[in-house]
Length: 218
Image (tube, rainbow, N blue to C red; front, side, top):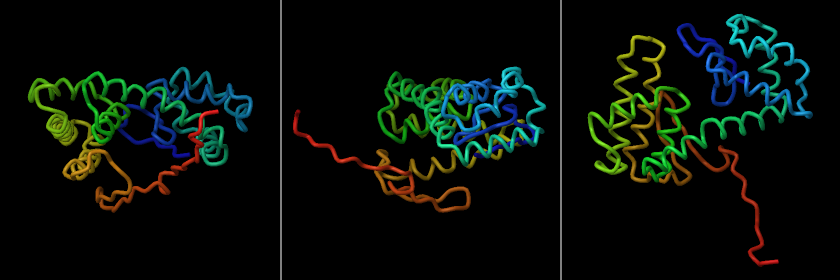
């Protein structure tokens, strides 16, 4: 249900669990998926906004009714949450896994670093800079390459002309903490400190549920 509009953010209005943007066109596509679901509680309420979303209208960023509707749907309708999960998997997570496989990135942490950049933006730019300045994954090995990539991205953010992006170095600082640990598999549970807080990752916190499966063939 998170709705954000920050001054200086080139993405414009952002929404959802991973904050997709109106200016990328992805907010329109995600809301369109939701509206097309016959079980969407607020589908009819969103229909009048589809043309403005498709046009990437900046006016939606200051439209209090639209923003309230986004928040309400995200908090109250399971269909919206399911739509977001499927959309982010399809558009970002699957892409990150494909790129990781093509590059020879095998660990959970390495894939997480790629995913964060793909969803945040400018992954290709920083990847190419890392390869130019440090070498390829094949040349360095995954651990060294991910460390080099993370530092390259940190420096790019820290010195960016956009002050809003400079604040985003907390992302790379957080990854520094995890990268310095011994377990790149991200085996649960694990805890690290970043951006002024302590974060504990457990199966319960992540909503992971196990289903008993009968291994006996039928």
